[in-house]
Length: 95
Image 1 (cartoon, rainbow, N blue to C red):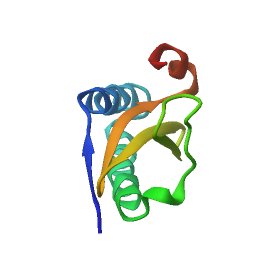
Image 2 (image 1 turned 45 degrees about the horizontal axis):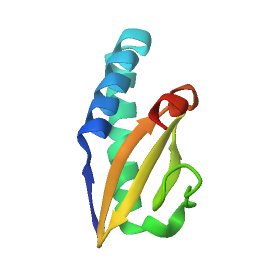
Image 3 (image 1 turned 60 degrees about the horizontal axis):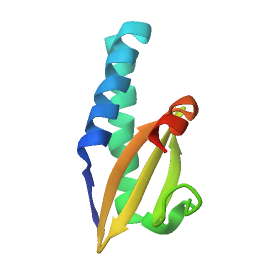
Image 4 (image 1 turned 90 degrees about the horizontal axis):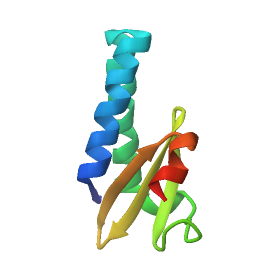
């Protein structure tokens, strides 16, 4: 079983998403969505090749959908590094 770690940018993305969720959907739904991410990160750590590469965006990166957000990650040895968590409209700024 692999492990995952969040980059500083991904941690900030997750916090931004959580705050938005609290403000727009309430604490309970925001907490659930936040926890769903960590379930998804565990899935990525166990099956990192499950989702497609996006070398046209960034070399060595993969992406997967979690709810309405896209998780961008890369493999470094047996560690899945979560690099960014973005909505479609945020992707162009990230690139």
